[in-house]
Length: 239
Ligand SMILES: [Zn+2]
Image (cartoon, rainbow, N blue to C red; front, side, top):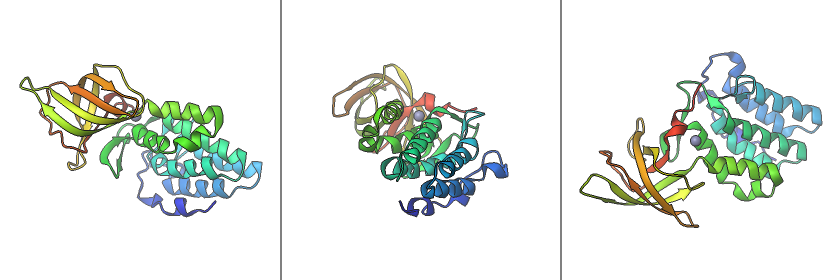
C-alpha cells in the first residue's frame, strides 16, 4: 500500500490539545507510516501501540485526539487494502477506540469539507460509514464498527416548509440509524462559520432509502438547503 494518504495530510497543522511532545500529531503521521509499511508482527504491534498510547488515542485515559479525524481515512485504507491480516485488525481496533473515546475539553470539534465545528465523533463516523462495503467484508468486528458509526446520524436538509406556529417541516436525507424523538440536535450551516445552533426534532419518519421527513420545534435559525443536523449529545462529548 502506498503512503500517499499519510503524506497528503499536513500533520503539523493539527492542534495538540495536551501540548506534550508525546502527543505531537506529526508523530501520528510517523506511526501511520510505520503501520502501513510494517512487515513483521513486532513492527505492526509497535506501530499500533504508538497510535493507541498517545496522539491518536490514549487508551489509558480513554481519550481521542483531533489527529484521529485525519488518521481515520488512512486506517480505513489499511482495513480495506492492508497487506496482512494483523495490520487490518490493528487498524480496525484503533478505529473502534477513536469512536468510543471522548475528546479533551475544547478539542471536541473539527473542520470538515461539509461544515465547521462538527463533533469529532460524528466526523470520524461519517468517514467510517463511507467505507461500508469494506467493513462488511471484514467480518464481525467490521460490522460492529459500522453499527457504532451508524449511531452518529447525520441529516442533510433539502427542503423546508415553515408553519405559522414557528415549527418547520423539513425534507432531508438521513445517514445512519433512525433515532427516537423528541431529540435535541445541532444545526450546521455550510455557509455560516461559527458554532452550531441547537434545535429540537419533535418527530421524524424515515424510509429505507434514508429519505426523511422531520418536524422541528420553533427555531429562529436559518434553515438553508445543504444545512445538516446531528445529535446534540455528540457535541457535548468531552473529558
Ligand atoms: Zn457523534
